[in-house]
Length: 170
Image (tube, rainbow, N blue to C red; front, side, top):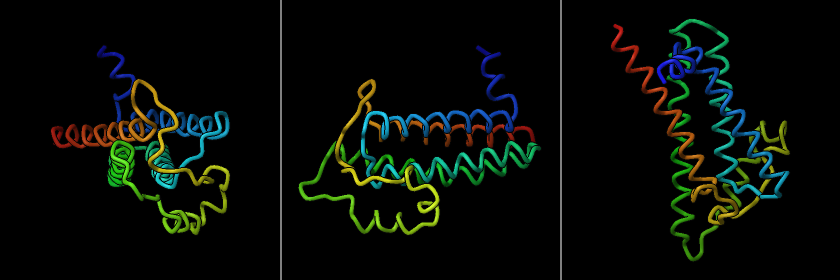
């Protein structure tokens, strides 16, 4: 077990590469759910995709730039983005568990996302107008939003773990 942990977490750089690989897999699975199974993402799902993409970019930059300090700095930038993604996923999970009578994800909210330049460059990834309270897919009893929260929480814990390790080494 220790050798497996060392394989993934022996250096901050290796951790960032694994983080990027897992996120790339998660985003690919999201594309499969959307285009393979025909599920329409809601605005909150799209915000979570943005957060995962930002974490992916920061993880790759931190891993490629090299150096332990650079990787830890990348994790410092990843942490607030992952916390924001976790908050969004938690909010969506709450809405799915306790759907309000007259809730809408908000076309205005979706319209704000539409105005971002990235949505013009990657329209297929961020196309969607599904209902944030709808549960279209589950795995082991968890919805997509639940699993997204788990993913963001894992990123937060990994970053905090490396910060703790760095502080202990000082």
